[in-house]
Image (cartoon, rainbow, N blue to C red):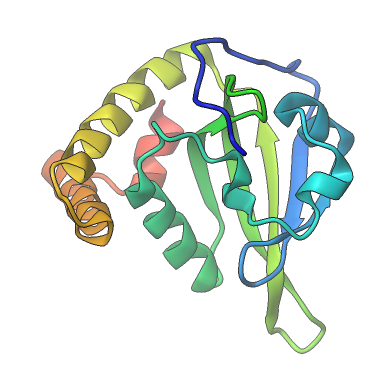
Length: 171
């Protein structure tokens, strides 16, 4: 059973990298020691579990639409993500997610390296994510809310004349 979120932030050092791998459906097939230490899980608890195990409820699901669409189209993506540890504490990461390939070029899963994000970037992205989450929460139907948040993200990026990649790398 997951605990409710706390206001306690967990962190890790700048020279550490959180690494995980998933299968095609997003179930964890590998997690390094940094991932386990920061998220407060054991290897047996995470292996085979959906990566959403560490999803923080304040993280807009619309960002994950963008992430999944991008990596399933065989592209990498960088994203700021707010995660939740087993005890309810939160931690921010700057994630780089890429598809993993078989020798024949087929996607076999996904690989993510996550670094400690800059504090000023978190402040900027947190504001956007709160706006997207508010849009998502206006809808009783979760899927409609997620799609509405995604549409809002696309509109905001279009209005600013930038792509998500450009936005993320400008922070």
